[in-house]
Picture 1 (cartoon, rainbow, N blue to C red):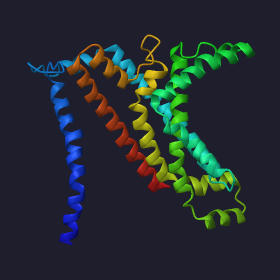
Picture 2: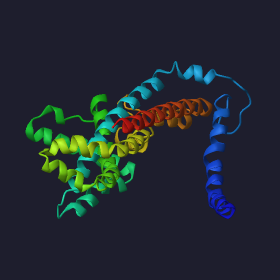
Picture 3: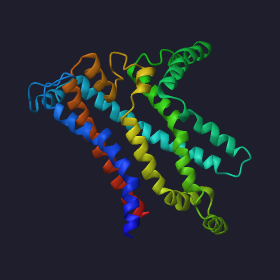
Picture 4: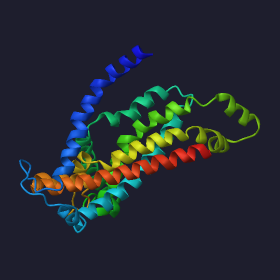
Length: 286
């Protein structure tokens, strides 16, 4: 037992060192710098909660938090909805199921910046062409308003992550005992009833994992936001990560940006842990 414990800590040691050096120590320094006048090189004065008081009066930052929250809610819903639909399709006994799994997963292999530029071309050029052809005003001027910019980001994010989330749902769907489904079918349950009362409860753990991943990724989104809308028009589609980056490297307010990052970290942590708690509780009730 003691030998096993030694090997356990020996293998774990490099990971703990990497986690401490890359995550924990920078976080502690960042927290400290948020209470100083740090300019990226040195800090000469302790300013207390000055930055934290300022950021709660910063309209641009508060708007970016509200925009990011709306985006995260919409993205979590659509990514999980389409991810589950795709998983249900490819787990059917179809000859093309394997090639479809590959095709649906491929957008996740493309970098966020490239995806943003691809969809920028689609929204601006292709949509405008369709609008001109069909004389539909709604297809013109995409990404030129806050609303179209918002839905453009949601579409991009859903298209990129639905295939990734599909893989998680597939793992749970393929572990559902077929005897249960066959017994329900013999008893007269239709497809919807089998999904509602058997499939859905048994894939509940997948919802916990998928919602955590989509929620955290939606809040942290930066590169797609940069390449698709660039925060425009007039910073109305600027998300929190972009706002922090802009504060730090465009306005050179390093300590102030650090305080925004700390608040952002706390918000994401509280929301993610709350979501996991309620999902776990719901799994038990199911």
